[in-house]
Length: 324
Image (cartoon, rainbow, N blue to C red):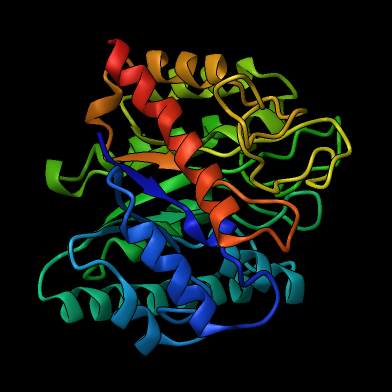
């Protein structure tokens, strides 16, 4: 099996931009045999710092899934009314403009490679509901607009982020999963098979929302029951105040164990928990998006240390498929 990797979370460029250092990191990634491609962060242009560097350093056989969450969080820091689900017309239009930029970037990447290499774009249902008003109706209107664009073959999927639940301070505080599923079902009823929308469950964000490891499994099962499960991305979280922070969406590695030497001791994302999620997918090998997004600490960790964390995390996924 091969997997998508949110490599940007493990990048050695945690502050500023050093293209030579990033080139070394990318060369190590390209040597890993079980990477299908990258979950690529969209900030507003194809690459946050240098489109030409990015195009020159990607593996020619990689596939890509764009994720809009880095750019969305940047936008929310400046305008809390920003978002595809925003009830503020100007804030929603700003989000649509951002999505148009993502659409253009997808076309640029495909054109460079000479074929479709962007399989999907993960959108998120901002804005933060504890700071401004959002709704299913606004999300529906935004998605109807986006479905009128040429996405260069990329599938539109919602990545569920932690919803606002009122019992604790959210990290994202976006729409509830049942609302997202309802809108996707409504739209899919009128769409041909090749344009069907879907949803991706992020392990850490579902656990952050529910405050239980079982929350990720529950969300996977709900998405699967709705016929909308398009992917699962593994990213850890914890209630312990480590270098990653307690209850922070900091992409913790899996829980340290005899097999996971470079894991995080306090991480809730154990190998058993990851395998339980894969089993809940029924046929995880058929998911369009499957992989991991793992950060590293300390921030000055060597590239060798970063690659070791990535290798061990993907090995957990390999062990599941080898045993089934």
